Amino acid sequence: GTEVQDFEVCDDDSNDGKEIFDLVDMQITILNGIPGTDVIYYLTEEDLNNQTNALDETIPFENTSNPQVLYIEVVSQNCIEEAQIQLIINPPLLMQSIGSVDYCDTDDDGIASIDLTIYDEEVSNGNLNLSHVRYFNSQQDAENNENALPDFYTNVSNPETIFARITHNTTGCYDVTQFELNVIPAPSTNTPSDIVICDDDQDGMSIVDLDAKIPEILS
Image 1 (tube, rainbow, N blue to C red):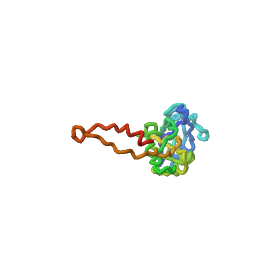
Image 2: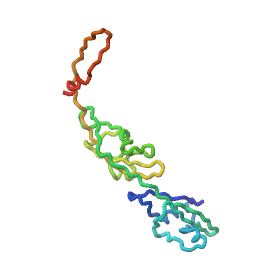
Image 3: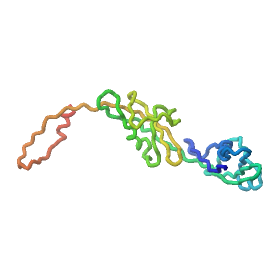
Image 4: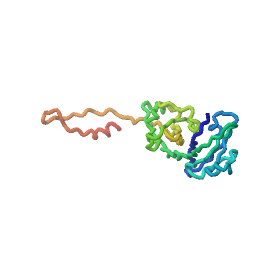
């Protein structure tokens, strides 16, 4: 049978609530492979009833409201089915780049196994409950949603640019942002000398100023 349904797209960065719809592609979806059948689109119910002012399906259609109702006839040799469909433009997902992030290198070789998921909350601008994040080596891979990096990723250069694709869980709209990953050497430390305390009241307890050992550890 036919697949009469609403059609949803994601708005572009302008967020103006307007997009272009391909009526021929929509027709293919609605007809669901049924031969000898056509879809006729109308802007108003009156035009549908009078069968006047049908839209030219070969001309891309830009909506004038959001959502916008189109009235359609599904016409075959034996019958005519009338229906309504909605054209819905979902708001774009616009994310800000987090700039650069640092990751500590434990062996000072500039290479580390990095848990990328620790950046999910930050790259999604705090909207992790509404979206999910995947990471990529290139803008093209992120746009195509292919060759995603594993959760634990070993960097191949330092610094390295990572591309994050953030996708809305409900609408499927997404944005791609990027950040620079810097693997930095862990700070060098020294083993401090022991702290010796005289316990005047012999209760085994004393107040110790650990901050006083910081210069010794970092020197």
